[in-house]
Length: 335
Image (cartoon, rainbow, N blue to C red):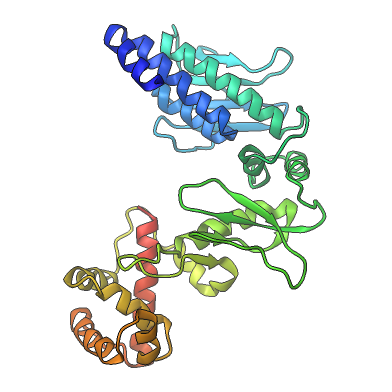
């Protein structure tokens, strides 16, 4: 209904239609109890210019570019920039990095984003009554730039034992999740695609969150075209974790990854077969994992080796295949 109304208004008055869309956008963020980063990102993208939130009293500084990327910047804002104070008795404000005069859309972005940011600040920085756990509190407890007192407060509000241990969990496109480490002999159930950070002291959760995001890059959808583990624990990666730092946006794939991609394009079964060969102890075990006869696996492997250009029957060739598949996942996650 809101989208339809915005469309009708846009036909009559483009600014009015855009303002309605801004209202609906930030209403969704408030209903979802979004964190500060999501709010400032929305302000920047909707306004079409960098936006920043500054609250020196709470030691919060967040800057987002117009494309929604966070960038650290400790410089003082230009007084000529459009801004909205977030409190009458403090130095906090939401800024749009361009001078006035403000148009109708700018004014609406400042008002709605400012109200949403004020609510998130109160929830996560100790000025509101306790409520159920929400993403803004989690965002604070895993934020290395947040003051220790703010992270300790957020941990208490989340029900985490401040003197105990917890771990962070990362999911594709989703916010952080944190869990207290269960008692010895128990385990926390994790489903879906996820990267698990190591168990750490609660106040060290930012490091667990960083490691969880690294672990997530090693996961796969678990489908025929993206085979691999859906859940990866950073503690199980060992030295493989170092590979994540070598593959990023713009990194050229090594020749072996290109060979795997070319092989995958030749037949729909190639990737699943190669993954089964790389992760099982024998052809028969691979056949069981693929639910096909072991002779079929042998035939497929012979064809796949021809496409790859190397044998995977010996330990060196198998390791080469394992590394190529891992690097392929890292390249896919960097897109």
